[in-house]
Amino acid sequence: MALVSHTVAPDAFGPAVALSCRECGARTPLAPDFACVECFGPLEVAYELPAGDPEGLRKQIENGPLNIWRYAPLLPVSPDVAERPSLNPGLTKLVKADNLARELGVTGSLYVKDDSGNPTHSFKDRVVAIAVEAARTFGFTTLSCSSTGNLAGAVTAAAARTGLRACVFIPHDLEAGKVVMAAVYGGDVVGIDGNYDDVNRFCSELIGDPAGEGWGFVNVNLRPYYGEGSKTLAYEICEQLGWRIPDQLVIPIASGSQLTKIDKGLKELIALGLVEDKPYKIFGAQAEGCSPVSAAFKAGHDVVRPQKPDTIAKSLAIGNPADGIYVLDIARRTGGAVEDVNDEQVVDAIRLLARTEGIFAETAGGVTVGVLRKLIENGVLDPAAETVVLNTGDGLKTLEAVADAARPTAVIRPTLDSFREAGLA
Ligand SMILES: *Cc1c(COP(=O)(O)O)cnc(C)c1O
Ligand SMILES: [Zn+2]
Image (cartoon, rainbow, N blue to C red; front, top):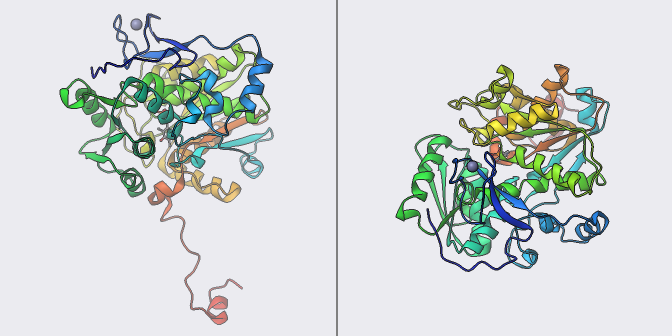
């Protein structure tokens, strides 16, 4: 492993105290490790969170920076994190979606958490911001990742802002918008002739090789820290609802990290007394052309059988999702479900959200809104309850998905006659 000798300041990770194994619970010191030495299970960050004064903590958060660093007391970052260079993601809009609710027959409150408003236009800025802090603390000089598209851009942009070198790896056949986004910030963008699972396997090899010495792979050797960034989605949604947990959440699944960490964030808010303890249901959303978790959920399996992805929802195209089994557990434990929609339904859902709420989602947002619609039609999701659906990326990055369906109404000469002839008067 790319180990770096570095003295770590005692409060470098704030309230985080160790890494703990999600399988056997064994603890190890905070380090750039991701697998348990006892059982090879995935490691996650363990905390001693500031319990005992929920009112004071709520006030501290509300008076904090207008980005994810307002939640620094609940993240593996040092207390002065907000003073360092960062893209400062977060505090994206929670949009009350009354028009969409009417179309879908939702009678309860429906909200879209619109994470396209982040600095590089996807939720990935949240996870990268935490990983960058860990990279800096461990003394890594190159920031890297295996990406389905959005992560690459979030990493190269964050590296530019923080003065690190970036070298990121993507499948060679991504959407033009994702490739340009990744490349424009400088650093090296490497297209690999293969799918995401091939890219990920390559990165795992690179970590063990001298060529990867001093490299922080945000979603591999820094994965425990990276994952914690998704907790901020849970914190924000609850704070924006007036410190309340919604009844139902619809969340996209690629590796499943985001979904599992949103659940972790909700549980922390309850444990800290920042919100009232109440039941909530978590629904996972996948594209039919890459639906290993949905297939396992429907079959009643505890294991996830890998698939070869074939879908326009490329940002979710992970055929062998690392956190798939934990997603199954959460969906079942909370009384939720995992569902999938086909590419045509994804495109329809993108257009539905755009024309009802003025929000242009990328294909992953088409997946969540499409799955929301399907779950309502199938009677699985309660239309009378309060629901939050996530849009995790910007439609401008996946233009090809809707380019054929969203075209000019007419092209005319600049005359009134021509306008009338086109039937638009
Ligand atoms: C990466 C990504 C996700 C979720 O990824 P996980 O690996 O499940 O955490 C969701 N939406 C978009 C747009 C993404 O880029
Ligand atoms: Zn273990």
